[in-house]
Length: 64
Image (cartoon, one colour):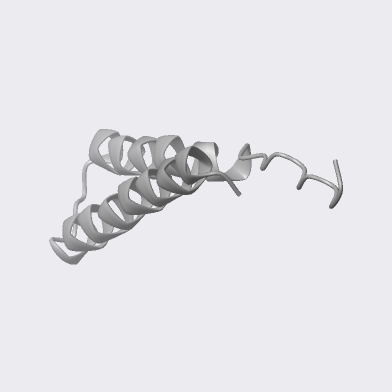
């Protein structure tokens, strides 16, 4: 895994962790507004998609 790929993966994990924390905090405030719940879900999904779609490059073959 190239350093650039590792950095990209780390960044995506950080964004997802922030989204989870934000969503948990917002849910703890017991939102009653459906629009607010929709906003939270949208943020969580947007943060998760890069990890769902993440593809690592194939490792090089020894001797290439």
